[in-house]
Amino acid sequence: MTLLFWIIWIILLIPALYWCVLAIASIPAPPRYAWEKEQPQTRFALAIPAHNEEAVIAETVKRLRELDYPPHLYSIFIVADHCKDRTAEKARDAGAVVFERNEGPRSGKGAALSWLFNKIFEDSSIQAVVIFDADTNVDRKFLRVMDVRLRNGAQVVQGQHRIRNENDGWFPLLTWAMFLIDNRYQNLGRNNLRCSAKHMGDSICFRADILRKLGWGEGLTEDYQLRQRLLLEGIRIEYEPEAIGLGEAPLNWQQARAQRARWLRGTRDASQTLAPVLLKEGLRRRDVAILEGAFQAYFPSYSTLTVIAAFFLALTLIVGWTGQPVPSSLLTAWIGLVGGLFIYPFGGLLLERAPLKAYLAILTGPLFILWRTLLALQARLSRKPVEWIRTAHGQGK
Image (cartoon, rainbow, N blue to C red; front, side):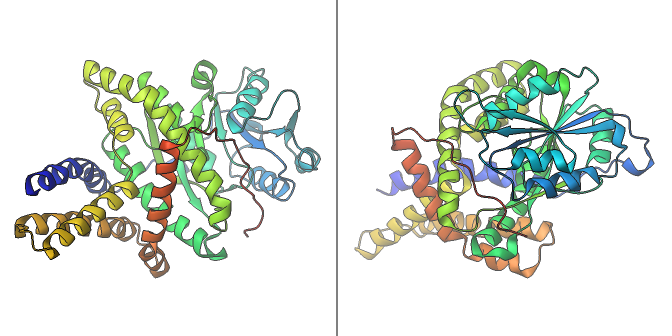
C-alpha cells in the first residue's frame, strides 16, 4: 500500500511541478513597448460575433469608436448571427459595419466568425484582425499597443482579458480573481518561457494572413484548438498585459454550467485529437513551445489535480486511522503537495497586487474546484452531444 501511494504521489508531482514552473516564470515583469512614441500604421478590422445582443452591442461599438487610434485605420465589423432582436439595427446605428447571417444552422461563435472573415477579407487593405465579444469594454490604448507589437514581429497577441462585473455577485467575483491568476501564470508565465499564451477567445489580435490561411475553426472550443494548430504551424501566441479588454462573467452557477460543460468537452475532444501530434512534433523539432502545448493537453487541470491530491491525502489519513502503518515521510509528502496546491493561486494574486477581496474570493475556491471537477468528469465520461448555448450578457455594469 505504501509503495502504491508513493507511486501515485510521484505521478501527481509531475503536473504539479509543471504548474509551479509557470508560476515561477511569471515573476519577472513583462517587457514594455514604447507605444506612446510610435505613429500608428497598422490597418485593423475589429470583428465581433453577436447573437441577440441588443442589450450591449451599441455601447460596445460606441466604446470602440472612441479608441485612441486614427479612425481611418480601423473598422468595426459585426456578424449578427441568427438574431431575433434588434442587434443588427442597433449596431449599424452606433456606427459598425454589420452583416446579417441567417442561412444554415447556428452552430456557435466559430462558424459565425469564419463567415464574417470572408466578408472582412474582401478588403485587401486589412493587415490585422482583433476579435472581441459583444460585451467587451476595451481600453482606449488597445490598438496602439497591438500596432507596436505587430510591428515588432508578433504574429498573434493575446491581450489581458479581465472581468469587469466582479461586484455583481460571488461567482463573478471568483471568476475575476481567477482571471487575474490565469493572466499572470498561464499567459505571462508562458510568454516569459517563450511558449504560447492561452487563446482566451476575446481581446486577441491576429495578422490577417494567419486567419486567411488557418481560419478560426469550429467546434465547442475552437479557440483552444486554434492555439494547438498555431503551434504546429510554428506560431506562438504572445501576451500583452497593456492591451486590456473587460468582459462579463456569468452571474451564477446555472448560467456558467452550460458554458463550462462546453469548454470541458471541447477541450477533451481537441486534446485527444491533437495532443499526440503536438508531442510527436515537439520532440521531432525539439521545440519547447510545442512540447509545452502537449504537456498542457495531457496534464490534469489545476482544479482536477488539487481534487485528486486531496483525495489521496484523505485516503492516507484514513489508512493511518485504521491502524495500518503509514510512514511519516509519506504523510508529509501528501500534506506538502496539497498545501502547495492550496497556496498556489495566492502567489498569483500577490504578484498582481490584487486587493483583499480577491484573496477572500479565492478562499471559497474549493467549492468551485469540486464543481468544475465534477463537470470535467462528466465531460470525459458522457457520450451525449453538447450544444453551444449562448451565455447571457447585459446584466453586469
